[in-house]
Length: 149
Length: 149
DNA sequence: AATCTAATGCAAATATGTTGCATTAAAGCT
DNA sequence: AGCTTTAATGCAACATATTTGCATTAGATT
Ligand SMILES: [Mn+2]
Ligand SMILES: [Mn+2]
Ligand SMILES: [Zn+2]
Ligand SMILES: [Zn+2]
Image (cartoon, rainbow over all chains, first blue to last red):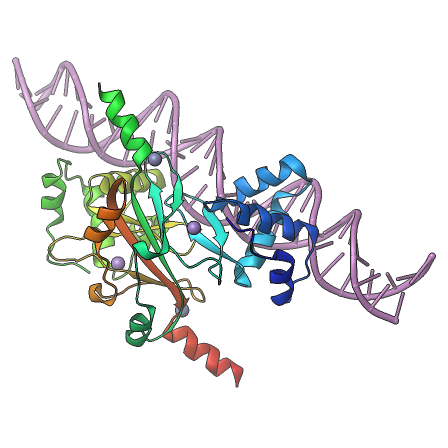
Protein backbone atom coordinates (compact mmCIF):
# COMPACT_ATOMS: atom_id res chain seq x y z
CA UNK A 1 0.00 0.00 0.00
CA UNK A 2 2.65 2.47 0.82
CA UNK A 3 6.19 2.88 -0.36
CA UNK A 4 6.14 6.62 0.08
CA UNK A 5 5.91 6.53 3.85
CA UNK A 6 9.07 6.67 5.88
CA UNK A 7 8.09 4.52 8.83
CA UNK A 8 11.13 5.31 10.90
CA UNK A 9 10.26 8.91 10.51
CA UNK A 10 6.59 8.40 11.31
CA UNK A 11 7.54 6.64 14.52
CA UNK A 12 9.96 9.27 15.64
CA UNK A 13 7.61 12.11 14.82
CA UNK A 14 5.14 10.51 17.20
CA UNK A 15 7.71 10.35 19.94
CA UNK A 16 8.12 6.59 19.65
CA UNK A 17 11.44 4.87 19.54
CA UNK A 18 11.89 3.27 16.17
CA UNK A 19 12.57 -0.31 17.22
CA UNK A 20 12.99 -3.16 14.72
CA UNK A 21 9.74 -4.85 15.72
CA UNK A 22 7.70 -1.67 15.52
CA UNK A 23 9.07 -1.08 12.06
CA UNK A 24 8.31 -4.64 11.04
CA UNK A 25 4.70 -4.32 12.17
CA UNK A 26 4.29 -1.01 10.37
CA UNK A 27 5.80 -2.42 7.20
CA UNK A 28 3.52 -5.43 7.10
CA UNK A 29 0.51 -3.19 7.53
CA UNK A 30 1.76 -0.64 5.04
CA UNK A 31 2.66 -3.21 2.37
CA UNK A 32 -0.76 -4.77 2.38
CA UNK A 33 -3.55 -3.48 0.22
CA UNK A 34 -6.22 -4.30 2.77
CA UNK A 35 -6.26 -4.10 6.55
CA UNK A 36 -4.95 -7.09 8.50
CA UNK A 37 -5.84 -8.71 11.79
CA UNK A 38 -3.37 -9.06 14.65
CA UNK A 39 -3.16 -12.74 13.87
CA UNK A 40 -2.40 -12.14 10.20
CA UNK A 41 0.27 -9.63 11.10
CA UNK A 42 1.75 -12.02 13.63
CA UNK A 43 1.77 -14.92 11.20
CA UNK A 44 3.29 -12.85 8.43
CA UNK A 45 6.07 -11.63 10.68
CA UNK A 46 6.67 -15.09 12.12
CA UNK A 47 7.62 -16.36 8.70
CA UNK A 48 10.64 -14.07 8.64
CA UNK A 49 11.36 -12.88 12.15
CA UNK A 50 10.92 -13.95 15.74
CA UNK A 51 8.21 -12.07 17.48
CA UNK A 52 5.70 -12.76 20.19
CA UNK A 53 1.96 -12.54 19.74
CA UNK A 54 1.64 -10.25 22.73
CA UNK A 55 4.28 -7.93 21.39
CA UNK A 56 2.28 -7.57 18.22
CA UNK A 57 -0.81 -6.67 20.21
CA UNK A 58 1.11 -4.16 22.26
CA UNK A 59 2.71 -2.54 19.26
CA UNK A 60 -0.67 -2.32 17.55
CA UNK A 61 -2.21 -0.65 20.59
CA UNK A 62 0.62 1.81 20.67
CA UNK A 63 0.46 2.65 17.00
CA UNK A 64 -3.29 3.13 17.22
CA UNK A 65 -2.90 5.34 20.26
CA UNK A 66 -0.36 7.51 18.47
CA UNK A 67 -2.52 7.66 15.37
CA UNK A 68 -0.12 5.91 12.99
CA UNK A 69 -2.59 3.15 12.24
CA UNK A 70 -6.36 2.75 12.44
CA UNK A 71 -8.17 0.02 14.25
CA UNK A 72 -11.01 -0.93 11.98
CA UNK A 73 -13.90 -3.19 12.81
CA UNK A 74 -14.20 -5.65 10.03
CA UNK A 75 -17.53 -7.40 10.06
CA UNK A 76 -15.92 -10.29 11.92
CA UNK A 77 -14.83 -10.97 15.46
CA UNK A 78 -11.39 -9.47 15.30
CA UNK A 79 -10.18 -5.99 14.66
CA UNK A 80 -8.09 -5.24 11.62
CA UNK A 81 -5.44 -2.61 11.22
CA UNK A 82 -4.52 -0.32 8.37
CA UNK A 83 -2.35 2.75 7.92
CA UNK A 84 -4.03 5.83 9.29
CA UNK A 85 -4.98 8.49 6.78
CA UNK A 86 -2.16 10.90 5.96
CA UNK A 87 -0.96 12.94 2.97
CA UNK A 88 -0.32 9.77 0.99
CA UNK A 89 -3.40 7.88 2.12
CA UNK A 90 -6.76 9.57 2.29
CA UNK A 91 -9.42 8.14 4.57
CA UNK A 92 -11.66 5.66 2.83
CA UNK A 93 -14.53 3.26 3.51
CA UNK A 94 -14.24 -0.51 3.50
CA UNK A 95 -16.28 -3.31 2.09
CA UNK A 96 -16.85 -6.47 4.08
CA UNK A 97 -17.97 -9.59 2.25
CA UNK A 98 -20.23 -11.65 4.48
CA UNK A 99 -19.59 -14.65 2.34
CA UNK A 100 -15.79 -14.88 2.20
CA UNK A 101 -14.94 -12.58 5.10
CA UNK A 102 -12.62 -10.38 3.02
CA UNK A 103 -12.30 -6.74 3.88
CA UNK A 104 -11.54 -4.52 0.95
CA UNK A 105 -10.44 -0.88 0.84
CA UNK A 106 -12.76 1.23 -1.30
CA UNK A 107 -11.66 4.34 -3.04
CA UNK A 108 -11.94 7.50 -1.01
CA UNK A 109 -14.47 9.26 -3.21
CA UNK A 110 -16.94 6.41 -3.13
CA UNK A 111 -18.46 7.73 0.02
CA UNK A 112 -18.09 11.25 1.15
CA UNK A 113 -18.76 12.19 4.70
CA UNK A 114 -19.08 15.78 5.73
CA UNK A 115 -17.18 15.74 8.98
CA UNK A 116 -17.50 19.49 9.39
CA UNK A 117 -21.27 19.37 9.34
CA UNK A 118 -21.15 16.37 11.62
CA UNK A 119 -19.00 18.16 14.15
CA UNK A 120 -21.28 21.17 14.16
CA UNK A 121 -24.31 19.16 15.26
CA UNK A 122 -22.53 16.85 17.65
CA UNK A 123 -21.74 17.90 21.21
CA UNK A 124 -18.45 16.04 21.67
CA UNK A 125 -15.08 15.60 20.03
CA UNK A 126 -15.06 13.63 16.80
CA UNK A 127 -11.80 11.87 16.12
CA UNK A 128 -12.73 9.50 13.41
CA UNK A 129 -15.53 8.36 11.16
CA UNK A 130 -15.66 4.75 10.13
CA UNK A 131 -17.78 3.64 7.23
CA UNK A 132 -18.20 0.00 6.43
CA UNK A 133 -20.29 -1.48 3.72
CA UNK A 134 -21.44 -5.06 4.12
CA UNK A 135 -22.58 -7.36 1.40
CA UNK A 136 -21.35 -9.97 -1.01
CA UNK A 137 -18.32 -9.33 -3.18
CA UNK A 138 -17.99 -9.83 -6.91
CA UNK A 139 -16.01 -13.05 -6.52
CA UNK A 140 -18.48 -14.67 -4.20
CA UNK A 141 -21.38 -13.64 -6.41
CA UNK A 142 -19.77 -15.38 -9.35
CA UNK A 143 -19.04 -18.50 -7.32
CA UNK A 144 -22.61 -18.64 -6.03
CA UNK A 145 -24.03 -18.28 -9.51
CA UNK A 146 -21.84 -21.08 -10.82
CA UNK A 147 -22.65 -23.48 -8.01
CA UNK A 148 -26.38 -23.08 -8.66
CA UNK A 149 -26.08 -24.64 -12.16
CA UNK B 1 -36.58 2.75 22.03
CA UNK B 2 -39.66 1.20 20.66
CA UNK B 3 -43.12 0.83 22.07
CA UNK B 4 -44.75 0.96 18.69
CA UNK B 5 -43.32 -2.34 17.49
CA UNK B 6 -45.35 -5.48 17.98
CA UNK B 7 -42.59 -8.00 18.53
CA UNK B 8 -44.83 -11.03 18.36
CA UNK B 9 -45.96 -9.80 15.02
CA UNK B 10 -42.47 -9.06 13.79
CA UNK B 11 -41.38 -12.57 14.69
CA UNK B 12 -44.28 -14.23 12.98
CA UNK B 13 -43.97 -12.11 9.86
CA UNK B 14 -40.42 -13.42 9.54
CA UNK B 15 -41.61 -16.98 9.82
CA UNK B 16 -40.23 -17.39 13.34
CA UNK B 17 -42.18 -18.93 16.15
CA UNK B 18 -42.82 -16.31 18.77
CA UNK B 19 -41.33 -18.04 21.81
CA UNK B 20 -41.10 -16.37 25.24
CA UNK B 21 -37.31 -16.12 25.12
CA UNK B 22 -37.23 -14.66 21.65
CA UNK B 23 -39.73 -12.07 22.75
CA UNK B 24 -37.70 -11.31 25.86
CA UNK B 25 -34.55 -10.76 23.82
CA UNK B 26 -36.36 -8.53 21.36
CA UNK B 27 -37.92 -6.53 24.18
CA UNK B 28 -34.63 -5.89 25.93
CA UNK B 29 -33.12 -4.69 22.68
CA UNK B 30 -36.15 -2.64 21.75
CA UNK B 31 -36.50 -1.01 25.15
CA UNK B 32 -32.95 0.23 25.19
CA UNK B 33 -31.99 3.52 23.67
CA UNK B 34 -28.60 2.26 22.54
CA UNK B 35 -27.47 -1.06 21.16
CA UNK B 36 -26.47 -3.77 23.63
CA UNK B 37 -23.93 -6.56 23.65
CA UNK B 38 -24.88 -10.21 23.98
CA UNK B 39 -23.49 -10.11 27.48
CA UNK B 40 -25.56 -7.10 28.46
CA UNK B 41 -28.67 -8.68 27.04
CA UNK B 42 -27.94 -11.91 28.87
CA UNK B 43 -27.32 -10.13 32.16
CA UNK B 44 -30.43 -8.02 31.84
CA UNK B 45 -32.59 -11.04 31.16
CA UNK B 46 -30.96 -13.06 33.93
CA UNK B 47 -32.18 -10.57 36.49
CA UNK B 48 -35.79 -11.46 35.71
CA UNK B 49 -35.87 -14.73 33.85
CA UNK B 50 -33.88 -17.92 33.47
CA UNK B 51 -32.01 -18.08 30.22
CA UNK B 52 -28.80 -19.57 28.98
CA UNK B 53 -25.96 -17.56 27.49
CA UNK B 54 -25.90 -19.78 24.43
CA UNK B 55 -29.60 -19.36 23.88
CA UNK B 56 -29.11 -15.62 23.80
CA UNK B 57 -26.37 -15.97 21.18
CA UNK B 58 -28.53 -18.27 19.11
CA UNK B 59 -31.55 -16.03 19.27
CA UNK B 60 -29.41 -13.05 18.32
CA UNK B 61 -28.00 -14.89 15.31
CA UNK B 62 -31.48 -15.82 14.24
CA UNK B 63 -32.90 -12.33 14.60
CA UNK B 64 -29.97 -10.89 12.67
CA UNK B 65 -30.39 -13.46 9.93
CA UNK B 66 -34.08 -12.65 9.61
CA UNK B 67 -33.35 -8.95 9.62
CA UNK B 68 -35.22 -8.07 12.81
CA UNK B 69 -32.12 -6.72 14.49
CA UNK B 70 -28.78 -5.36 13.33
CA UNK B 71 -25.40 -6.58 14.42
CA UNK B 72 -23.34 -3.46 14.89
CA UNK B 73 -19.64 -3.23 15.55
CA UNK B 74 -19.23 -0.90 18.45
CA UNK B 75 -15.71 0.36 18.84
CA UNK B 76 -15.05 -2.41 21.35
CA UNK B 77 -14.40 -6.12 21.17
CA UNK B 78 -17.95 -7.34 21.14
CA UNK B 79 -20.76 -6.86 18.73
CA UNK B 80 -23.80 -4.97 19.83
CA UNK B 81 -27.36 -5.38 18.71
CA UNK B 82 -30.12 -2.91 17.98
CA UNK B 83 -33.50 -3.02 16.28
CA UNK B 84 -33.14 -3.12 12.55
CA UNK B 85 -34.41 -0.12 10.64
CA UNK B 86 -38.13 -0.26 9.89
CA UNK B 87 -41.03 2.18 9.53
CA UNK B 88 -40.68 3.28 13.13
CA UNK B 89 -36.88 3.30 13.22
CA UNK B 90 -34.87 4.76 10.38
CA UNK B 91 -31.28 3.66 9.92
CA UNK B 92 -28.85 5.87 11.78
CA UNK B 93 -25.17 6.20 12.63
CA UNK B 94 -23.67 5.61 16.06
CA UNK B 95 -21.20 7.41 18.21
CA UNK B 96 -18.62 5.47 20.17
CA UNK B 97 -16.92 7.19 23.09
CA UNK B 98 -13.36 5.97 23.41
CA UNK B 99 -13.27 7.18 26.95
CA UNK B 100 -16.33 5.59 28.56
CA UNK B 101 -17.07 2.95 25.94
CA UNK B 102 -20.68 4.05 25.47
CA UNK B 103 -22.28 3.62 22.12
CA UNK B 104 -24.93 6.19 21.33
CA UNK B 105 -27.51 6.27 18.58
CA UNK B 106 -27.30 9.46 16.52
CA UNK B 107 -30.20 10.93 14.71
CA UNK B 108 -30.72 9.66 11.21
CA UNK B 109 -30.19 12.95 9.40
CA UNK B 110 -26.83 13.59 11.01
CA UNK B 111 -25.10 11.65 8.33
CA UNK B 112 -26.60 10.90 5.01
CA UNK B 113 -25.22 8.16 2.86
CA UNK B 114 -26.20 7.88 -0.74
CA UNK B 115 -26.59 4.14 -1.07
CA UNK B 116 -27.85 4.40 -4.62
CA UNK B 117 -24.69 6.15 -5.77
CA UNK B 118 -22.66 3.69 -3.78
CA UNK B 119 -24.30 0.70 -5.40
CA UNK B 120 -23.74 2.14 -8.86
CA UNK B 121 -19.98 2.29 -8.44
CA UNK B 122 -19.56 -0.94 -6.55
CA UNK B 123 -19.41 -4.31 -8.30
CA UNK B 124 -21.14 -6.47 -5.67
CA UNK B 125 -24.29 -6.61 -3.61
CA UNK B 126 -24.60 -4.04 -0.85
CA UNK B 127 -26.75 -5.15 2.05
CA UNK B 128 -25.91 -2.64 4.66
CA UNK B 129 -23.89 0.48 5.36
CA UNK B 130 -22.57 1.01 8.82
CA UNK B 131 -21.35 4.39 9.95
CA UNK B 132 -19.64 4.84 13.27
CA UNK B 133 -18.18 7.98 14.66
CA UNK B 134 -15.48 7.67 17.28
CA UNK B 135 -14.44 10.29 19.74
CA UNK B 136 -15.09 11.54 23.23
CA UNK B 137 -18.62 12.19 24.43
CA UNK B 138 -19.92 15.30 26.15
CA UNK B 139 -19.97 13.67 29.56
CA UNK B 140 -16.40 12.48 29.38
CA UNK B 141 -15.24 15.86 28.11
CA UNK B 142 -16.76 17.52 31.14
CA UNK B 143 -15.25 14.98 33.52
CA UNK B 144 -11.84 15.39 31.95
CA UNK B 145 -12.02 19.16 32.20
CA UNK B 146 -12.99 18.99 35.85
CA UNK B 147 -10.29 16.52 36.81
CA UNK B 148 -7.61 18.77 35.33
CA UNK B 149 -8.33 21.49 37.89
C1' DA C 1 31.85 -1.78 31.41
C1' DA C 2 28.00 -0.86 34.77
C1' DT C 3 23.45 1.00 35.19
C1' DC C 4 18.99 1.95 33.96
C1' DT C 5 14.78 1.81 31.40
C1' DA C 6 11.78 0.68 27.94
C1' DA C 7 10.77 -3.13 24.91
C1' DT C 8 9.89 -7.75 24.45
C1' DG C 9 8.79 -12.54 25.90
C1' DC C 10 6.24 -16.11 28.34
C1' DA C 11 2.50 -18.11 30.94
C1' DA C 12 -1.74 -17.61 32.47
C1' DA C 13 -6.08 -15.37 32.70
C1' DT C 14 -10.18 -13.29 30.73
C1' DA C 15 -13.77 -12.16 27.27
C1' DT C 16 -16.42 -13.46 23.56
C1' DG C 17 -18.42 -16.53 20.63
C1' DT C 18 -19.32 -21.55 18.83
C1' DT C 19 -20.30 -26.63 18.69
C1' DG C 20 -22.24 -31.11 19.81
C1' DC C 21 -25.22 -33.50 22.10
C1' DA C 22 -28.89 -34.03 25.92
C1' DT C 23 -33.26 -32.41 27.58
C1' DT C 24 -37.59 -30.02 27.41
C1' DA C 25 -41.67 -27.76 25.68
C1' DA C 26 -45.31 -27.31 22.83
C1' DA C 27 -47.80 -28.02 18.50
C1' DG C 28 -50.26 -31.37 15.88
C1' DC C 29 -52.37 -35.44 15.70
C1' DT C 30 -55.49 -39.41 17.41
C1' DA D 1 -56.51 -36.17 27.39
C1' DG D 2 -52.43 -39.14 25.78
C1' DC D 3 -48.86 -39.96 21.94
C1' DT D 4 -45.58 -38.34 18.59
C1' DT D 5 -42.59 -35.28 16.52
C1' DT D 6 -39.82 -31.37 16.09
C1' DA D 7 -37.93 -27.14 17.21
C1' DA D 8 -36.18 -24.58 21.15
C1' DT D 9 -33.40 -24.47 24.97
C1' DG D 10 -29.74 -25.99 28.21
C1' DC D 11 -25.22 -27.63 29.43
C1' DA D 12 -20.40 -28.70 28.95
C1' DA D 13 -16.70 -28.27 26.39
C1' DC D 14 -14.18 -26.00 22.91
C1' DA D 15 -12.19 -22.20 20.07
C1' DT D 16 -10.40 -17.81 19.31
C1' DA D 17 -9.09 -13.05 20.42
C1' DT D 18 -7.28 -10.11 23.59
C1' DT D 19 -5.24 -8.73 28.13
C1' DT D 20 -2.44 -8.99 32.37
C1' DG D 21 1.45 -9.67 35.41
C1' DC D 22 5.74 -10.57 35.92
C1' DA D 23 10.47 -12.14 34.08
C1' DT D 24 14.04 -11.27 30.75
C1' DT D 25 16.61 -8.72 27.39
C1' DA D 26 18.45 -5.12 24.48
C1' DG D 27 19.88 -0.56 24.01
C1' DA D 28 20.59 3.95 25.43
C1' DT D 29 23.07 6.67 28.99
C1' DT D 30 26.34 7.38 32.07
MN1 LIG E 1 -8.26 0.50 3.98
MN1 LIG F 1 -28.90 2.71 17.20
ZN1 LIG G 1 -16.52 -12.51 -0.95
ZN1 LIG H 1 -17.86 9.01 27.16
